Image (cartoon, rainbow, N blue to C red):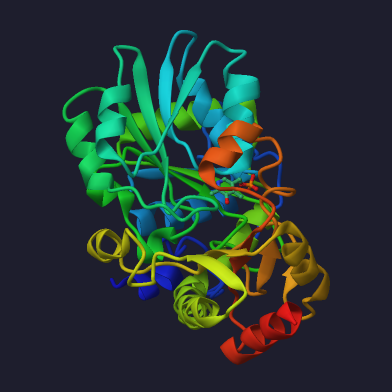
Length: 377
Ligand SMILES: *Cc1c(COP(=O)(O)O)cnc(C)c1O
């Protein structure tokens, strides 16, 4: 089954007898037993719920994993993931990481004795040099947020080799439609399902997809124990969103290509970061390891004042955090998503007041461009 078909038909629920084309929402916290020692397979919704299980099967199928575990948000997924580790363990993480993940690693995981080394994972030698005998995992985001650096996942897999280091990839930006980290050697794929998977800025969700049944079982145990589960209604919304994932990814990428090309030619724009531009350092790598470049673009205007002017003036494009929905959104990483990143780290990564990030939606490209053009004055 091709990916666009899988988005609609993988994990189709054939167990119910009504013929309903859409899987129902089982809005039930608990499930009655058929008799002593007899379960329907469902006992309590923190452990398992048919609607949530349906979206888990769908996401696992799309990512090529053995199983997926659904959470109430991307951060609920990542914080549960961190319970795989114990005091004294070390993880290596991409330095240009989602701000919420940095806050979790530095403020919560550090307190629990887990040390994070931030490394530019697009530099394979730097990753190699950072591995110690305590390294338990490498946590990668690609392309990165907001600088759009790309990591060679197969290259990282080669470095890890046969060691027991878990390779974890946050695939929120490219989605399984464009990128398959498990096929390249990843052990766990992370998603903020809030973004492209649900796709309409109307729900929060998170997923951990496991390559092996053993990891899936551990993560399911952690999920039911810690309890940050996805509700049946939100699971339904994510399932519905995924049905149009392919068309949304194609259209938003097409728009992103046009917007990035236009930004490149604008005299007030001093830099454009988008892996789909042929002069991006990872253009060739992206073409080799992925089926698309996605629709996230960062760009730099001359100054923080110029950036603020644009944020105040866009009309169609909404000045809002988040990404991956049908609406084009613009954010100011310095004051929104990356406020908690310490200043020296921000400066080293190039996150300053003049940087803006666009999540390109599925409107007409010319309307998006004309809104930007007006906002730039
Ligand atoms: C948004 C995001 C998260 C966190 O997900 P939430 O659903 O907001 O909790 C994690 N990683 C990336 C790359 C994100 O964009």
